[in-house]
Length: 78
Image (cartoon, rainbow, N blue to C red; front, side, top):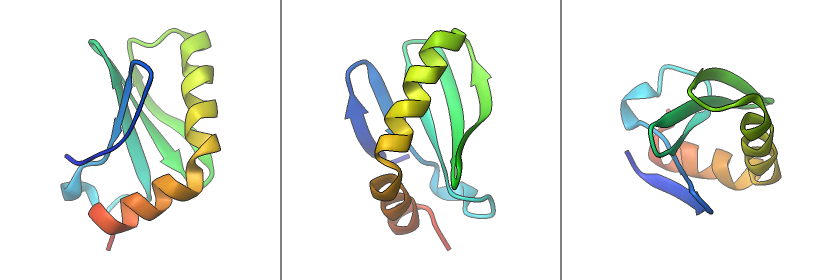
């Protein structure tokens, strides 16, 4: 599970065994976790984040979409 970004309290990473899915990243903070598709950026799953924090996370991912897509293809893609 390579970490592709650390921003504030968030760890953004991908699972190398999920290459059968569209490009996406996982975001963790403490016990909360979310999965976001990258093209376009949208929420796939949320476990514990409040709606306001999810909007912050979505903005963070959208601002770095190109870099995260590149990292996903390098570490996790087909």
